[in-house]
Length: 243
Ligand SMILES: [Zn+2]
Image (cartoon, rainbow, N blue to C red; front, side, top):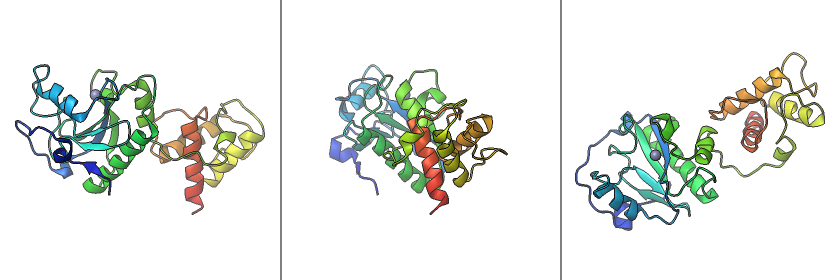
């Protein structure tokens, strides 16, 4: 069970009003950044949202996550949010405090987002769609770096031995490292084409890379290069096939 700091514990002001949403109505998990310094507190964000600038009934988000990886209850699981028009009922709004256009949040904060997502899936009994604010509204939120991570399926696993041998490979590459990649893909259940493990990173291998990534929940649409996240996902597919 994830530890969520209740409103009482962080001294939240009571909401002026609230609209209840059944957990069964939740379909998405939408990530935001606060677009401010990491030192902002949930109380400050709530004061801004309830003040003259916004005049909302409460802090807009369902949950907030601080740089040190703590999860704070905002409106919580069963109250409609004010984080993205058209998604306030269907999606839980989760704000990572800070600005993530150029840098990723701390690994503690990222782990907390992934943990909260797992808890949301457990509570709703379904795999919620992972979204960034910009998927529902014209905004740069949650910042380019955090958005890429969200689209990548929120990877938090620490690098597995062997990952580095794949990172940096691109379509068109040939050689032993490509063979290693192809072997992992094949053993992970993703065919690299009729030629098999031939050490040639061609379109069929790209397709297998993409399939492995999609199977791990990545929403990236490329398989023609191996990023750190892609390597972890390929390794994870390999491991799952051998459990
Ligand atoms: Zn946002």
